[in-house]
Length: 370
Image 1 (cartoon, rainbow, N blue to C red):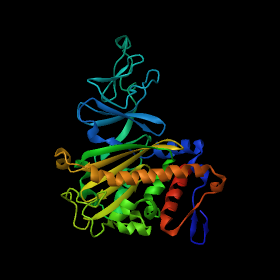
Image 2 (image 1 turned 60 degrees about the horizontal axis):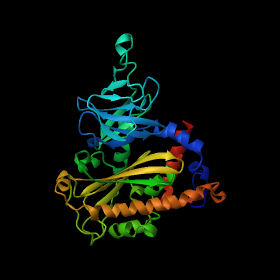
Image 3 (image 1 turned 30 degrees about the vertical axis):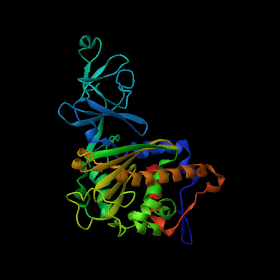
Image 4 (image 1 turned 30 degrees about the horizontal axis):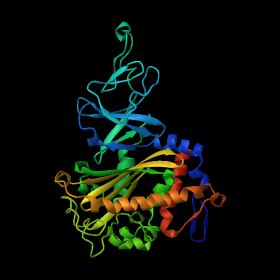
């Protein structure tokens, strides 16, 4: 990237609009790296499943009879029909394709098909569903479509520990033991990279996030939490909790340290996850890029199980980041048309407080070059 004085060049506009580039990103980024698919406890019983779009593939994640989660390409081995069309569901014994009734056990093996007993030479493992690598971390199921998945520890886990500066820091929130308090799905008419860039910087915070900067006043200065390794933005003195009005939250999570109290930490796990850590809850965003100009974002608010079980009113807690999300996604949708303008043909510029976005752009280019 070239530089003019203190300004740094961005990606060109076509990077956000070109269908061919988006397809390349699907293949070389979303289908090649670990992808956070769903919250593990969404599938509480054997036979519960969810289908998830990962790059250009539909993936089905199912809870097996042994209690383990497994993932498969959602494609029947007979004639290629989708095995399950619905997003979520539950089966008793098998995943059955509605086209020719080929049925697969919950471990992926071919279990039954019309006239299968007359074809004893059919290998039920070889003609089972195609397995997809799956790991569980932070209470989520992460899948990878690559034939040789990259190290989970060196990519996903490292992203969190590198950002916080302490490998143990994220463990204090015990995210895998938290309960889902609220989920909101946003359908954003913008390229996924615009959403990542927006999340990573706070140069815009003073302009569009009045509620957030009232709680985290240092954000009004334009420097994001991710600008510094290990830094957490401190709550304003009068603020009692991470709520829309600064009122009390639900008490510090049991293992959150005194150093982490009254602070907000943000983590980007490339390519599609944002983790937000505050003393009494955790907010997780997962992006599902569907087109060059369309991205679905699922946002989960996670609390101590006792808080959720008590039926506590979560609205003031949820409302703060819901407003932040709506403000951010509106900005991204306002930006998307400009990516097609001749004014942005060569791209734009980054100011010094956004320098870490240049590293993200370099990462995208390196992935596309393979």
